[in-house]
Length: 444
Ligand SMILES: Cc1ncc(COP(=O)(O)O)c(C=O)c1O
Image (cartoon, rainbow, N blue to C red; front, side):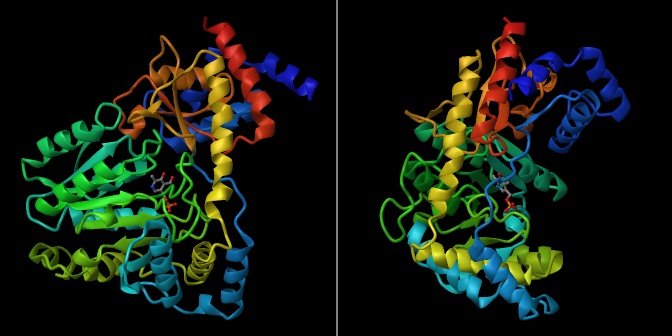
């Protein structure tokens, strides 16, 4: 171990010229790197210059998938279900399990028809944004509560929608609500989209904000799109006991015009099968929009989502994976499978990683969540005095640490980086510490 660390110290930092050469060879634009390009650069630097990387650029889950899912998927395969198309609006088992899960953890009263499986929550977000921007003529703008998972914003672009953002760094509580109202006045907002906990700031919208956003959406015919990709992962509270308070905060408690997306990727360590659920509010599910008829031949919102959106994109979600997710949701609801306790591992990793970054001169960018300290979750946001985000990201590459800029997440805090903690195990903390110590010594 000691030898390995010594070797690392000799290798870092990578000479600037070597990094320039790699940019020349790859043709990547050093001022506008995508997550995949950063990932590729880290691999090239590692292979060419023998610099070991602490990978912090991709938001990939890194906890083994539960046997509950594996067994259920195997059983479905053994029954030959991969040989059959699934019902495109979901198998009854998953619709029922989703409905009961929503009661147990969100305290929502729904029917099975309000649960629609999607290919990852990204597909749910894609269809939701498409409908939000086409429900009512002239409302083609999506308002994001930034920072935002970059892919979500790319979707709006791909769909030909307009996008604007309000940064949660500057606007929370009453101030956030007033700012949303200012934007809504022009009548062009079709959807408001946020993730909570937020990727990457880990801010969590509170009940006051959710209630007010719900009111704004309902009065102004706007679709609220709530992305719960990290459901239950605000570890400052214990949301792990089904059917008991505190329940996970959701727009569903307050509004009528909403969709809530629940990803299985992080909370259930189930990213591969691309299987999530979208919960459509009972009210909007039935509601008719003449403009949707023009857009996708279906006037009723619920039909537009499944027959209009899901059917024409993927015609449903992996048949066998739906059984895996259904069984995990069932087990979570019955209290047998504590998915929140399992993911709290990320909180422990984040706490340690944060401590190391701060020790070596970094500053946490989004460190407050209203009046409280932001929780430790899947991401951290970090800056270093005197550095802009892009330069800092490139500089850290020379030390074998890969991150992405906060700018690429729509954040106004251009000095910062998004640091994903999922790939660093507790045993790798000394490697990270070595690198950051060296970085600080070289950048005093
Ligand atoms: C905020 C947010 N939404 C959605 C997703 C994608 O979820 P899925 O894998 O279910 O498509 C992610 C993944 O990183 C995310 O961070």
